[in-house]
Image (cartoon, rainbow, N blue to C red):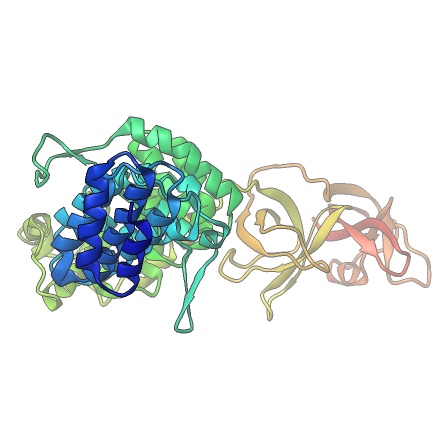
Length: 504
């Protein structure tokens, strides 16, 4: 056995001589682990030598030679060191303008039986570079299943930093890639270039628990909930999909595509239209809005809102012409119809969108329960109002853009974003309630006005009548009056009481 001699030849760069000697040893005793180990490291030197895009065929040849040795599972060093060389070559190959996907297929087939240390930095390095192939690699799902996402190391879960920029962690990117490939579907038949694909529902069901686990363990990851939504839709489970999507949509509410997807969940055209109007009200390049405009135009035409529809259609045509994109057949057919020829378009539909923004916001926050409160005070200059729900919840919030002209005594249904701080709350949606509804902080009262001789205020039972109301309604002592009172905290007396807000 010439193990030491082979090693010395390797170290001195005499690979040909080392290979010849190692082969002779292996031929004499092919099952001897030292002989296998000896020639494996010579093959490794050739991997280093041929680690370039020009020598990729030679690289694969020696990679498969290592495979043919059938080294035992405890020979991990040779495999782990090879992982770095494989990853390095893959990185170079993915930079090519025209990628030959047969190469990753061949390399993957060759390393399937390699005994890498799992998990390890080397094994993660291998995945990171194969991951770059995922978009157009038909074998990605098979590779990811073989690699197994349970093998990520702690560092893989952290965001990556490069040149002063922060990128998604490789773990989040892995789950995104896997989800997208499931949604893309699998090629039907044996032709890898077939355009016919089908969704593997069994595979989606198998993957969803893993996706749930990553969502729960890493709530900071933004995109897995969105992709879970798409996968649930693919399974036909739209109810669960919507409940999954809403928390994600709240975080991404300023992106038009989020509202486009939210529109797809709506059964009523009015709600679909509200979501599409919200999408079009955001600051998004016109060329990215053509599909949204087309969806809205179809609803507008069905509702005989021809002026608004023509406005959207003209913007679609303009955006597509600017980019030299084909005009869809449906758009062309609309432009030939009489209503289109006889309708005058307008500059834009901004004012129309505004009519539906409130409905859209209510849809987005539908999973947050409404709370019934009473308006106690309105500061119109600052667009702020004070509210009372009961003795345990009261405060103030900005109402601009959520409700028009609130008045003291209005009963409103509010969705709050979390708990208040120092009395200040953030309102997500506000809806005036016109129906008769009871509220703990509001009551009707009637009775005789009780006033002291020297006082300019009075009471009806336990309801305080403010001097302004007395002057406004020219009230006198013992007058029989009735009205509406709101629960109010008296800072001077440090206690709760009732204060009249309206006299009938």
